[in-house]
Image 1: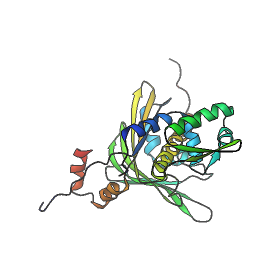
Image 2: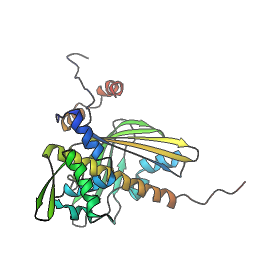
Image 3: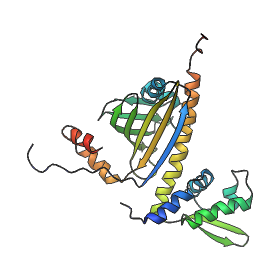
Image 4: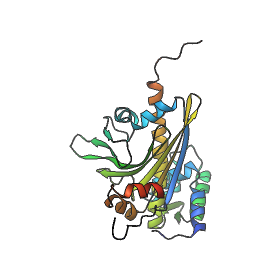
Length: 116
Length: 156
């Protein structure tokens, strides 16, 4: 069983309550990235992306190193990383499944009920 | 029954994900979409162009599997065991990726609880996916289904 202090896990889940940050964590679970690489999939300024990274850093999920003008980000702490990566991937997985179920239910709905 | 009875405690989750969504369909349809193998194969799973083969033995202790076979013959997918079956309101089942998709879900085995609530002609689905320790889940599977079931139902 992974030992953890309740406080730090609360900060982790607060940090992960935002879908953009969850996606950033999911991306970092595949390997390190710069802040601009993390900002890329979103229509977001570097400043906004850096703020999200700051929240993740505060929660101890991500560590960053400035190399010249580039801030490089890595997912922190191997055991927690696995759990965090699971949360990020699983949240995304179920959102996608619900989208797919919605389409399936719409496609198989059959003719609309006649008006009474 | 002689000897010391095995003690089983439900594992505390390492983490959990909770999602809710309301669907524009009556509860029976949504429940069936979730449990009928032919229906499941038409909407569930990863982004592949071919549907999975789905099997489901919808009863407590029954198993389900959702398997994709790649063109090169590699297999992978999901499988698990039903812990609670209460149609059309509630399902609880274990959830594990396997085969070529073992790393899709990362870490250990996990448990899914799905509740289907009627909202007129619509259905609210509430899903909780818990990441569990590996060891208790393996012990659970090893313990066998015969005499453990009744005790397990009380614990869960």
